[in-house]
Image (tube, rainbow, N blue to C red; front, side):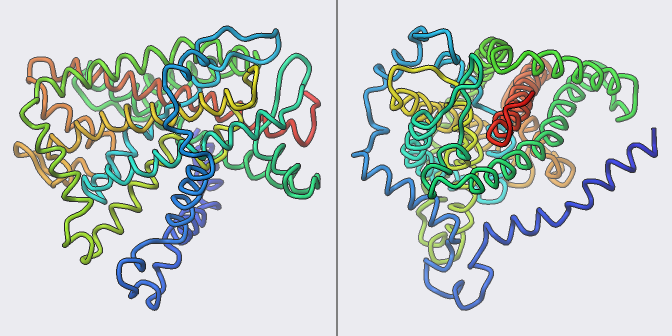
Length: 423
């Protein structure tokens, strides 16, 4: 078994270059002295300018489609599908929120301070327009595969970029690699969540190679195999149940924690606004960090501009292509403005991100964003119920990770359909 672990580690060690390359691209060209010395502008990377700029462009061109009446969008989302092909708009919407809504926001605040939350809201607002455009395009160019629809960026990318098959094949391979490389971290997130619950219940730290973790591994493999082998319809059937449960649990528990700490709400908004606009942040370089972290989290939490939401949008059955665009735009709002903001409330109000709270050693918790988040939760609730609240939040975190794990494997299959429809 040890040899198997070493082989797996060696395989992923081969791809260790991806992290520094990713960091370089996110920072370019701020990592060059000549650009970084430009006042204010030199703090913003090309990726930040591009992502926000595209969102602004689509917002203007669509006359701020993200401000459309939300009641109409909800009616579209809840309407029964009109045909026997595809899945409902709601089922497609349910493939959304992931663990980045918790640990991602915690990390953004730890690095970029509370001001990152403001820029996350800004990025999400304009990202709603991008999500609308992506989802509408994928609905326009989706294709039938038996009794299901398939489609995503490779399908409409090919049609837009000269209708050359090599373009779609390249984009498909990129998405397959991206999706499958998300499998290990999401699997790790599931293990972390269930392991934390087991540690809390047992009152001790269980070894990673204990029987409990092997049982988690077997259970996870069986569950994923059973659900995914049933096709996208079975996947959405389970996410239709799991997503409302995790969202309702997380929102309810977060609201209770916020209400318990109601006097700290003014502190939250003061820290977010000052962190985003204070003169020292603007000219001292902090705003660049806050904005970069905010836009990253806004992107990673709701997936606008990544292209992954196009895969979920393509399988939906709608009367008009724009309808799914509205639904996925609402998904960006729900992911960022609701779920991520609730996480932000808890993390900022608890002060753990500042280094220590109630004698807790910052160095002992900062290595794990989930630990920072759970420490924040514990700091805001009565000691008598701290363990119960921690278990509930871990259940939510585990469900976030599990549904994203199902989604990523399904997205890899959807992308592969462009290359070949053979099972």
